[in-house]
Length: 496
Image (cartoon, rainbow, N blue to C red; front, side):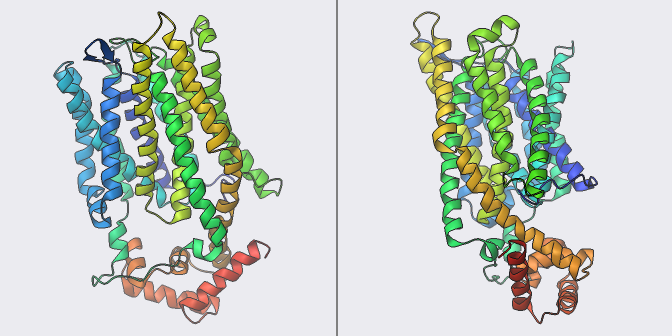
């Protein structure tokens, strides 16, 4: 991304809040999925391994489907401030059920319902919160949050106290606290004026800089990305049935996984910064995510290839695969945010669609992995499962969402980012104030005065006053002339 990561900037309170809050969310998920036991259900002649994870993922997918199908007003209600604390409390209570009630089939289902539905809605709320922020700021935050979450989980896992990982369940409260302060905006409220009337369809940045061919290409890349996401989830689900036996820790080498994940996120941030500097200096048009995507898949494939070898060194191959998969999730989160920005959809809906694809693939992998293990020729099933998982990940990387697709996406994102650059140039050249600079991009996107007031939590009369000052400073006489100025600035930045 041409405008991303352009040097170190002062840390804003909202950036710190979102980074720490999302780290709490990720830390809770890591502890829930990977720091507990492998709970299996007795399905007749075989045991269905990782039944707890399967149930949780199933209810998360159902919550994502509900969000995708809901009307904007209903979606806003589901992601409202009032319900965030409810979801956090359900996450804490649901994750504590195995300790409070004990292992039982009913406990697995109840935990899946309470935790899965709430975790899905919290994740979508984080998508909406990140969707409000400039991509060059929120993308690094995702990787920093994942590294912090992994480091905290590793520290608690290493404590000699047996119940230490249980304390990580309280991280859900930190996630809700941060989200409540960030106040994800209301999509329906933004569409309605203060008088209840319908606002006209906004002119998005895509209308300003994207060609019809680019919009078609964006839709094609979105479909390919989701298909590849399903296969990556399938590969991870395969390995979930391979990493341990029923009753054991779900991931015996989770310490190695978390350590590798911290190292991966550190390397990813360095790659993103390096690629952004190269793009800024005119030495390439590579997206900052290109190298990170390649690195995540490389880590996964290294784990698959060395499954029989790494065990002798005390680090199992599946631990490395899981680290690569968790790193890949951070890449996918960034992609979901970028696709939401490019298509103009609610980032919460983009998160819901993307993670539904990922988790459906993971659920299928868990089922197929259990089937393979039930049919095992003695002792050979683990390697058969690893082989299937590796082939799925390799196929997704080579033939579905490839590096060429990343290159195509980076061009579209770079063009879209020119809109943000154009806003900064106009603000600088015409001496706009801080508040006027905040209103300018909303005005260029066709927002009504009522909608701008609602998004910035100011009165409509204040918005009208700032708009008049913007027109006066830029020498324009109304919204259309201001949009024309934006178009000319975008073309100038693009060398057209």
